[in-house]
Each structure stands twice: as C-alpha cells, then as structure tokens.
Length: 255
View 1: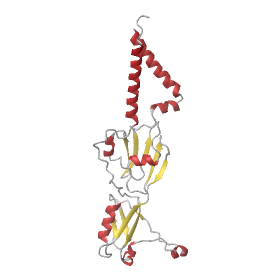
View 2: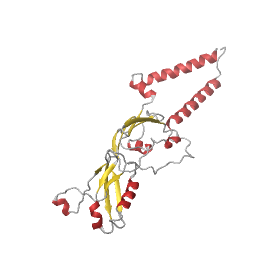
View 3: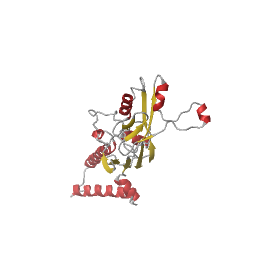
View 4: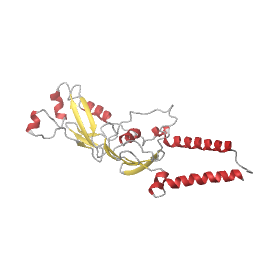
C-alpha cells in the first residue's frame, strides 16, 4: 500500500511514547529529586507564640528548693497517696509572656522549648542550685486534608515537625495527590498566610513553610485525572483522548 508506515517506525514511535510517559511520571511522583547537595535541617524547633499552652517542670538535686517553681493542680487524696503530681499549664498571653512563680513575668514568644529552658535556668539560678527545666508545648496540632491516606487533625508530641513527617502521619499522599502544589495555610501574628510547596523539588526544605507550626492546615490537591473522574468523565475519557492523539499522529505520518 502506498505511503504505508513500516512496522519498525510504529514500534519506534510506541517505544518513544512509553519512554516519554515514564519520564513524566517520575517527575510527578518522586520526592526530593536531585537532593544530593541539599542540607536537611532537623533542628528547627517549634517557636512559642501567643495562645500556646505550656507545661514547665523544674527539678534539682535539692527538690525542696525547686518546689516553689512547680505549680501543681489540686488532686484527690487517693491520687496524692500514689505520689501523682499534675502540673498546671501556662497560657501565653497576647503579649507573648507568662507569669512564672517567684520571678514574675517572663517573655517567651519566639523562643523554642530549649531556649526557654535555658532562660528560666538563669532566672532561678539565685534560688536553685543546678536546676533542670523541662518545657513542653501542649497544643501542637495540625490538620491534613485532601488526597492523603488518613486525613484528619493530629496532636504532635515532638518539638519539631517537617512537611515530610507530617505527610507520613497522614499515610502519605495517594496516587491521585499533586506533589508539586501542596497548600500550607498558616496564621502569623493574627494574619492568615498561604504557601504552595513542591515536594518533588529538593529545594523545598529551604522554605520557611517546610517546618510545620501550630495549627497549620495542609491541603493536598487532586491531580487532573482525579478531578475528571469525580466529574464523571472517568477512565474512558482518558483512553479516548490518548487514542485521538495516536490517530492524529498516524494520519500526519501517512500524508
């Protein structure tokens, strides 16, 4: 037949299309591409901000000297016989301060738990010898929605949480989730801000939004194919589109 396409050309074109689709799929799916020279900072601890709830425990070789700095809740007589002591929480004020026993007002906003611990150690050094101060942020919660395995709200016990670890808590992205357009919604000083992160790019670790903060909301957008399926187009539409492109390609070659 005149102008017939040799089978080897059809085979060659098919292989090229398969290779092209494979490359695109990798770019869309693989996290932290070209990450050999990227430094992952795992020491960016959570910063304290107004509205946070803190527990602060002070201990020392002479525990009686440390006792005035530990505010405890009222407990039942049965619990007290077991030696159970529950600490009171400190609410960070709108000015970023707390009222601490003996020493009074302490500025805590912008500090992480280790920095606040060192600050209190210095402030009580005249009262307690060799104090040990443990600080914990109690209200560290995040919400993850969209195309993940287990969407929901999560309470975090760590003092550092990266985007990658947060996604792990939610069961990672589904196959239908966009990895290049992850929305982080955050409130800073009463102002709501948004950022879109591409987790396939290794440079994402340099974003200030990569380290998750209290009350952040993470939303994973569905890929276009998923949106089409939800809209009723389904898989058949995708196959028809591919077939249309292939037929057009063949017609161009046979002219």
